[in-house]
Image: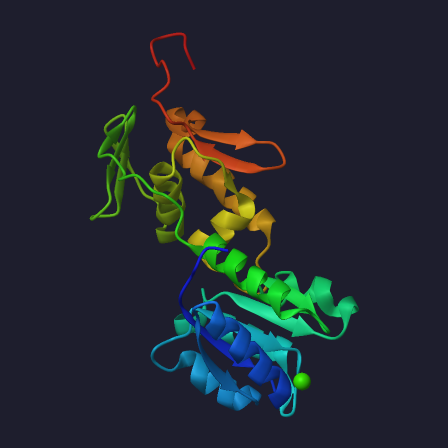
Length: 240
Ligand code: CA
Protein backbone atom coordinates (compact mmCIF):
# COMPACT_ATOMS: atom_id res chain seq x y z
CA UNK A 1 0.00 0.00 0.00
CA UNK A 2 1.22 3.47 -0.78
CA UNK A 3 1.91 5.56 2.29
CA UNK A 4 -0.51 8.42 2.85
CA UNK A 5 -0.72 11.06 5.48
CA UNK A 6 -3.45 13.17 6.92
CA UNK A 7 -5.43 13.77 10.06
CA UNK A 8 -8.32 11.39 10.72
CA UNK A 9 -11.04 12.17 13.20
CA UNK A 10 -12.47 9.00 14.73
CA UNK A 11 -15.99 9.53 16.07
CA UNK A 12 -16.86 6.49 18.14
CA UNK A 13 -17.98 5.89 21.72
CA UNK A 14 -16.61 2.35 22.04
CA UNK A 15 -13.16 3.10 23.43
CA UNK A 16 -11.75 -0.34 22.53
CA UNK A 17 -12.61 0.26 18.90
CA UNK A 18 -11.14 3.78 19.06
CA UNK A 19 -7.85 2.34 20.37
CA UNK A 20 -7.77 -0.31 17.64
CA UNK A 21 -8.49 2.23 14.91
CA UNK A 22 -5.94 4.71 16.21
CA UNK A 23 -3.29 2.03 16.31
CA UNK A 24 -4.06 0.73 12.82
CA UNK A 25 -4.31 4.15 11.18
CA UNK A 26 -1.19 5.54 12.83
CA UNK A 27 0.69 2.48 11.63
CA UNK A 28 -0.35 3.49 8.11
CA UNK A 29 1.11 6.95 8.59
CA UNK A 30 -2.06 8.87 9.54
CA UNK A 31 -2.46 11.13 12.52
CA UNK A 32 -5.63 10.63 14.54
CA UNK A 33 -7.96 12.47 16.87
CA UNK A 34 -11.06 11.04 18.49
CA UNK A 35 -14.40 12.08 19.92
CA UNK A 36 -17.05 9.97 21.64
CA UNK A 37 -20.14 12.15 21.36
CA UNK A 38 -21.95 14.14 18.67
CA UNK A 39 -21.16 17.45 20.35
CA UNK A 40 -17.47 16.67 20.93
CA UNK A 41 -17.20 15.41 17.35
CA UNK A 42 -18.77 18.55 15.89
CA UNK A 43 -16.36 20.75 17.86
CA UNK A 44 -13.39 18.61 16.87
CA UNK A 45 -14.40 18.41 13.20
CA UNK A 46 -14.77 22.16 12.86
CA UNK A 47 -11.72 23.02 14.99
CA UNK A 48 -8.25 23.69 13.61
CA UNK A 49 -6.60 21.91 12.04
CA UNK A 50 -9.66 20.49 10.33
CA UNK A 51 -9.43 16.73 9.80
CA UNK A 52 -8.76 15.38 6.32
CA UNK A 53 -11.28 12.59 6.83
CA UNK A 54 -13.88 11.67 9.43
CA UNK A 55 -14.78 8.13 10.52
CA UNK A 56 -18.25 8.38 11.92
CA UNK A 57 -20.11 5.87 14.04
CA UNK A 58 -23.84 5.72 13.40
CA UNK A 59 -24.90 5.27 17.04
CA UNK A 60 -23.54 7.81 19.49
CA UNK A 61 -24.66 8.33 23.09
CA UNK A 62 -26.09 11.82 22.49
CA UNK A 63 -27.45 11.42 18.98
CA UNK A 64 -27.10 9.76 15.62
CA UNK A 65 -24.16 9.83 13.24
CA UNK A 66 -26.48 10.55 10.32
CA UNK A 67 -27.71 13.77 11.91
CA UNK A 68 -24.14 14.77 12.65
CA UNK A 69 -23.14 13.96 9.07
CA UNK A 70 -25.86 16.27 7.72
CA UNK A 71 -24.74 19.00 10.11
CA UNK A 72 -21.14 18.64 8.95
CA UNK A 73 -22.24 18.85 5.32
CA UNK A 74 -24.04 22.11 6.06
CA UNK A 75 -20.95 23.61 7.72
CA UNK A 76 -18.51 25.46 5.42
CA UNK A 77 -15.41 24.09 7.21
CA UNK A 78 -16.47 20.47 6.77
CA UNK A 79 -18.70 20.64 3.72
CA UNK A 80 -16.13 18.82 1.61
CA UNK A 81 -14.45 16.68 4.26
CA UNK A 82 -14.67 13.01 3.33
CA UNK A 83 -16.81 11.03 5.76
CA UNK A 84 -16.88 7.25 6.15
CA UNK A 85 -19.75 5.93 8.21
CA UNK A 86 -19.31 2.95 10.51
CA UNK A 87 -22.56 1.14 10.96
CA UNK A 88 -23.75 -2.09 12.52
CA UNK A 89 -26.90 -1.99 10.41
CA UNK A 90 -26.42 -2.87 6.78
CA UNK A 91 -29.98 -1.78 6.00
CA UNK A 92 -28.99 1.81 6.83
CA UNK A 93 -26.33 1.86 4.16
CA UNK A 94 -28.37 3.16 1.20
CA UNK A 95 -29.56 6.12 3.18
CA UNK A 96 -26.15 6.84 4.62
CA UNK A 97 -24.14 7.04 1.42
CA UNK A 98 -26.96 8.58 -0.56
CA UNK A 99 -27.48 12.29 -0.86
CA UNK A 100 -29.85 12.25 2.07
CA UNK A 101 -26.97 12.04 4.52
CA UNK A 102 -23.95 12.72 2.35
CA UNK A 103 -21.33 10.24 3.56
CA UNK A 104 -18.67 9.22 1.04
CA UNK A 105 -18.48 5.56 1.99
CA UNK A 106 -19.34 3.15 4.79
CA UNK A 107 -18.15 0.04 6.56
CA UNK A 108 -20.43 -2.43 8.28
CA UNK A 109 -19.40 -3.62 11.76
CA UNK A 110 -17.62 -5.84 12.46
CA UNK A 111 -15.04 -4.83 9.84
CA UNK A 112 -11.36 -5.59 9.57
CA UNK A 113 -9.08 -2.65 10.27
CA UNK A 114 -7.20 -3.48 7.11
CA UNK A 115 -10.39 -3.11 5.09
CA UNK A 116 -11.07 0.18 6.82
CA UNK A 117 -7.55 1.48 6.10
CA UNK A 118 -8.03 0.62 2.43
CA UNK A 119 -11.36 2.46 2.35
CA UNK A 120 -9.81 5.50 4.00
CA UNK A 121 -7.07 5.63 1.39
CA UNK A 122 -9.48 5.10 -1.49
CA UNK A 123 -11.77 7.89 -0.32
CA UNK A 124 -8.85 10.28 0.21
CA UNK A 125 -7.48 9.51 -3.24
CA UNK A 126 -10.87 10.06 -4.82
CA UNK A 127 -11.19 13.39 -3.06
CA UNK A 128 -7.89 14.69 -4.34
CA UNK A 129 -8.60 17.57 -6.67
CA UNK A 130 -9.19 16.53 -10.24
CA UNK A 131 -6.50 17.45 -12.72
CA UNK A 132 -7.21 20.82 -14.24
CA UNK A 133 -5.83 22.94 -17.02
CA UNK A 134 -6.08 26.73 -17.01
CA UNK A 135 -9.24 28.16 -18.51
CA UNK A 136 -8.16 29.84 -21.76
CA UNK A 137 -9.29 33.41 -22.35
CA UNK A 138 -10.52 32.37 -25.79
CA UNK A 139 -11.90 29.04 -26.91
CA UNK A 140 -13.62 29.02 -30.29
CA UNK A 141 -16.68 31.26 -30.04
CA UNK A 142 -16.16 31.71 -26.31
CA UNK A 143 -14.30 34.37 -24.45
CA UNK A 144 -14.03 33.93 -20.68
CA UNK A 145 -12.78 36.41 -18.12
CA UNK A 146 -12.29 34.16 -15.10
CA UNK A 147 -11.32 36.98 -12.74
CA UNK A 148 -14.20 39.19 -13.79
CA UNK A 149 -16.74 36.34 -14.04
CA UNK A 150 -17.75 37.41 -17.56
CA UNK A 151 -18.47 35.40 -20.67
CA UNK A 152 -18.82 36.47 -24.30
CA UNK A 153 -20.10 34.33 -27.14
CA UNK A 154 -19.14 35.57 -30.61
CA UNK A 155 -18.29 38.90 -28.99
CA UNK A 156 -21.68 39.26 -27.28
CA UNK A 157 -21.63 39.25 -23.51
CA UNK A 158 -23.94 36.69 -21.93
CA UNK A 159 -24.82 36.85 -18.25
CA UNK A 160 -24.29 33.67 -16.27
CA UNK A 161 -25.27 33.07 -12.66
CA UNK A 162 -22.40 32.37 -10.23
CA UNK A 163 -23.31 28.70 -10.26
CA UNK A 164 -23.52 28.50 -14.05
CA UNK A 165 -20.18 30.26 -14.30
CA UNK A 166 -18.62 27.79 -11.86
CA UNK A 167 -20.11 24.87 -13.78
CA UNK A 168 -18.82 26.24 -17.09
CA UNK A 169 -15.30 26.98 -15.87
CA UNK A 170 -15.09 23.62 -14.09
CA UNK A 171 -15.99 21.87 -17.34
CA UNK A 172 -13.56 23.98 -19.37
CA UNK A 173 -10.72 23.42 -16.89
CA UNK A 174 -11.24 19.67 -17.26
CA UNK A 175 -11.87 19.73 -21.00
CA UNK A 176 -11.48 16.47 -22.83
CA UNK A 177 -12.24 14.48 -19.68
CA UNK A 178 -15.62 13.08 -18.74
CA UNK A 179 -17.11 14.53 -15.59
CA UNK A 180 -19.72 12.35 -13.95
CA UNK A 181 -22.80 13.98 -12.44
CA UNK A 182 -21.57 12.97 -8.98
CA UNK A 183 -18.21 14.63 -9.52
CA UNK A 184 -19.87 17.81 -10.80
CA UNK A 185 -22.31 17.82 -7.88
CA UNK A 186 -19.45 17.46 -5.50
CA UNK A 187 -17.13 20.00 -7.08
CA UNK A 188 -19.58 22.63 -8.30
CA UNK A 189 -22.38 22.44 -5.74
CA UNK A 190 -20.73 20.65 -2.85
CA UNK A 191 -22.72 17.80 -1.40
CA UNK A 192 -25.87 19.31 0.04
CA UNK A 193 -28.98 17.63 1.30
CA UNK A 194 -31.86 17.65 -1.17
CA UNK A 195 -29.70 18.00 -4.26
CA UNK A 196 -29.74 15.17 -6.76
CA UNK A 197 -27.87 14.41 -9.95
CA UNK A 198 -30.93 15.68 -11.81
CA UNK A 199 -29.90 19.15 -10.65
CA UNK A 200 -26.77 18.79 -12.76
CA UNK A 201 -28.81 17.94 -15.87
CA UNK A 202 -31.09 20.91 -15.33
CA UNK A 203 -28.18 23.31 -15.00
CA UNK A 204 -26.29 21.88 -17.95
CA UNK A 205 -29.43 22.39 -20.02
CA UNK A 206 -29.62 26.03 -18.90
CA UNK A 207 -25.92 26.47 -19.52
CA UNK A 208 -26.23 25.14 -23.06
CA UNK A 209 -29.14 27.44 -23.79
CA UNK A 210 -27.05 30.45 -22.80
CA UNK A 211 -24.06 29.19 -24.74
CA UNK A 212 -26.12 29.37 -27.92
CA UNK A 213 -23.94 28.51 -30.91
CA UNK A 214 -21.25 27.27 -28.50
CA UNK A 215 -23.68 24.82 -26.82
CA UNK A 216 -22.12 21.91 -28.66
CA UNK A 217 -18.87 22.40 -26.73
CA UNK A 218 -20.58 20.67 -23.81
CA UNK A 219 -20.99 17.05 -24.83
CA UNK A 220 -23.34 14.58 -23.16
CA UNK A 221 -22.13 11.07 -22.45
CA UNK A 222 -25.34 9.16 -21.98
CA UNK A 223 -25.67 7.65 -18.54
CA UNK A 224 -22.22 8.88 -17.53
CA UNK A 225 -21.97 12.65 -17.46
CA UNK A 226 -20.62 15.57 -19.43
CA UNK A 227 -17.45 16.56 -21.19
CA UNK A 228 -16.26 19.89 -22.50
CA UNK A 229 -14.78 19.37 -25.94
CA UNK A 230 -11.00 19.14 -25.92
CA UNK A 231 -10.53 20.95 -29.22
CA UNK A 232 -12.41 23.79 -30.83
CA UNK A 233 -14.68 22.08 -33.36
CA UNK A 234 -14.68 22.99 -37.04
CA UNK A 235 -17.00 25.99 -37.09
CA UNK A 236 -16.86 27.01 -40.73
CA UNK A 237 -20.20 27.64 -42.35
CA UNK A 238 -22.28 24.51 -42.64
CA UNK A 239 -20.47 22.76 -39.82
CA UNK A 240 -22.30 22.62 -36.53
CA1 CA B 1 -21.59 3.51 19.00
